[in-house]
Image 1 (cartoon, one colour):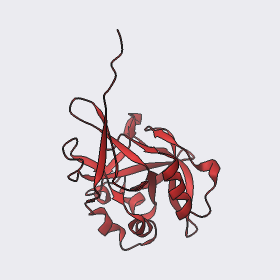
Image 2 (cartoon, one colour):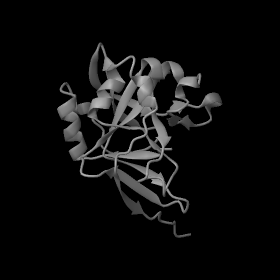
Image 3 (cartoon, rainbow, N blue to C red):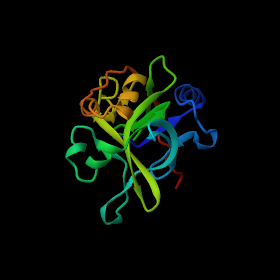
Image 4 (spheres, rainbow, N blue to C red):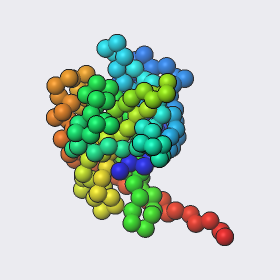
Length: 192
């Protein structure tokens, strides 16, 4: 599960290097919550472009949002399969957050790097584009905190995820071994 992620100035600069036609008005910074608009890299007319999309698909019977999908089973799920096959995206982030069993928020970011790309896919609902982040089994860095984590792609795999109509299925099975640094945040209780 991935419940939030973060984009900072360094990550934004890295995105600018990769997506040359970046429109600065589309870049959203700060902690991104489910349901908010966020900057996502998707294909449009064969080119990688930065677009704003809402994080989360409307859940069936309007019961909230679906924000993540398991990479292992996304192609088998009717709600996700067509989007995974035809509308893949990458979500640039500096860090992502998971919560431990005591509900402490823990931040994870790549060791020695200024950002990462999370695998995702998107679909249009009611004239708005919405995206979902793919998750996979947690690697050694995340496992002590949570059993799932976002599917992290390096720059080369990000391009393949967006462009390669044959390789995306292989990437769904990827188990990222990216070493991640973690930083804990204690949840603050309200004084009542």
